[in-house]
Image 1 (cartoon, rainbow, N blue to C red):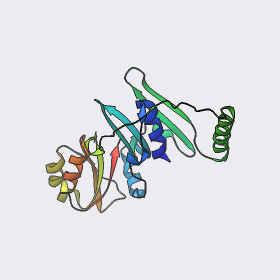
Image 2: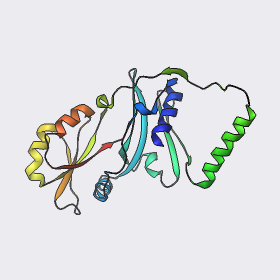
Image 3: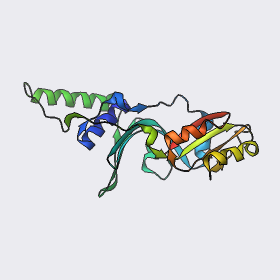
Length: 209
């Protein structure tokens, strides 16, 4: 659902057709209760975000869990509510928020579509983007920070972690007596994966918004 929504929104934003099958999609099945405790420790919430952006003419799109700071407007979106957060070069930050699920909002959307179709019988309605496909750049080139969780003693792994990632922020919580976490500096996803492969006993990783 989130993947198809970001495909439509990306098509509207960029003026060309974005195929949802080209969008990297990752669900929440690997998120654990321990991850939520770590998120709370660093004043974040875990949210499933569908995002797209234009970086110097390269287009990225992704659906995945992210750690979002509690001060960010998206952190308060929960339950049946959805939100669209837009960053514009001149517009700055804008968020659109409202019900996105449940029987009444869904029924309202279906009825609106039926009424719109009835009003335009035997007419071709022009879409707001070109039929030309938009080539997405692989997410391996996108740059961001990551939270990583490791099973093991921090003192045993700290030098290896710093060797691979440089200056990281280590995180420990009382509930995780057999492991620790850390947040990396910003780096490309491909580079992150390469360095992460050198760290033993990694039990999880989440991107940071």
